[in-house]
Image 1 (tube, rainbow, N blue to C red):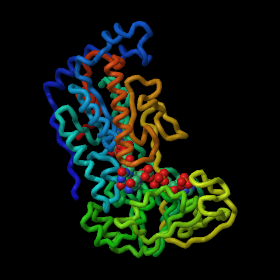
Image 2 (image 1 turned 180 degrees about the vertical axis):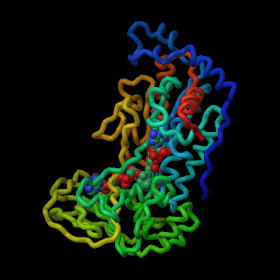
Image 3 (image 1 turned 90 degrees about the horizontal axis):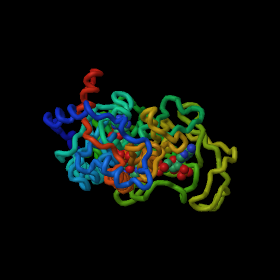
Image 4 (image 1 turned 135 degrees about the vertical axis):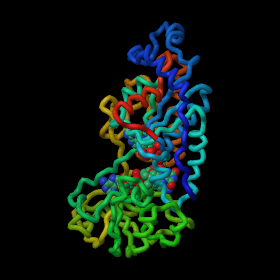
Length: 417
Ligand SMILES: Cc1cc2nc3c(=O)[nH]c(=O)nc-3n(C[C@H](O)[C@H](O)[C@H](O)COP(=O)(O)OP(=O)(O)OC[C@H]3O[C@@H](n4cnc5c(N)ncnc54)[C@H](O)[C@@H]3O)c2cc1C
Ligand SMILES: NC(=O)c1ccc[n+]([C@@H]2O[C@H](COP(=O)([O-])OP(=O)(O)OC[C@H]3O[C@@H](n4cnc5c(N)ncnc54)[C@H](OP(=O)(O)O)[C@@H]3O)[C@@H](O)[C@H]2O)c1
């Protein structure tokens, strides 16, 4: 199926002009730094700060499932809220466009729902804006009543073993971006002239990548895979894909559905523990002590841990794809970030100690979970934001929204789409 082009949403000049005028006399510094209203003064606090009678201007950063589901919730449950979605790419939909495998077009149907949201006259999409670089989070906070960070996980977890930087060793994230047309990965040029590829990690991304490597190219022709990737796959000589896990087959992270339409495997065998990469073209596999399936020495069932034994096995190959998970990055020095967990510290989507700042999706809970999981958590964030709005915990007075950001961007010689 085709993917919709980005929604074009005409700026409302009258509203922009009004908003700019209001912007001149109201400043963000009026926002109290403490979240809960002082005890005993709830009513007067509400009267003073309630934005219910005005148009809440809300900004969402990121246009993947988290951004769109958060926007959908806000627009549905507040009849006057306006939502501006800022996106670093020229086009919306995040991993639905640049992550979901091309041979799973049915998953991309959520784009129809997102497009409905974008078509609302209270929603606008602004592509080509990198928040944290083109505009800062505090600048967004000044322009909006609330800011929701839904910018996903754009990096990958590194194995941090020798050899990771060798030619022919890539992250699965980059490989996925390559076959899905993510601009930053179009120069990847993986060499597929070998007959064996090794994928490290046994999650759904590993299976997606294995399937794409082994699916006959003619089956991919009707998908939205890029022409360049299809051309390279047509020339591919890869016949064997090893999926290498650090734990056993009972602890795989992938779901059966990703194996293929009938649940049959893509022709890859899963085997062994996490490797160290030797010279290019070999993955050396340190052994684990053998145990009954699901009862390895490091624990039982799900709790099983990989225990290095020192045994090493050489596995000749021409391509190594590391698929051990994605990772979020901090977006702006003003926003707290838990480097260990790779998330913005939050309570049900409220960023800790940052009134008016929220988060949803992978940057809120870590880089796991499918689109429906992301939907549920984004609705929850939307709910928390509306609760705070209703309770008068967001700044009062009109906010300029996009008008102010547009002016800022143009003063920097930048623009949005
Ligand atoms: C390879 C892969 C395949 C998947 N396949 C499936 C599947 O088949 N089915 C399924 O249910 N789930 C699938 N998932 C999971 C699903 O994609 C995620 O649950 C979901 O995309 C997470 O949504 P998100 O909005 O948090 O992140 P994302 O989808 O990553 O969206 C984040 C958005 O923020 C933008 N952004 C990042 N930084 C900035 C910035 N500084 N300024 C502005 N914008 C920014 C990004 O460009 C992106 O558009 C897959 C995941 C991966 C990695
Ligand atoms: N079709 C779909 O529905 C679909 C498709 C793609 C992605 N997704 C979703 O997107 C999310 C991300 O998927 P993902 O595959 O990137 O991540 P994932 O599901 O978290 O899988 C990561 C894999 O890497 C392994 N791993 C982690 N650290 C390792 C290390 N240091 N050495 C060796 N192996 C290591 C993990 O093993 P351990 O278990 O031992 O930690 C696990 O097998 C998941 O929730 C997935 O379900 C869904």
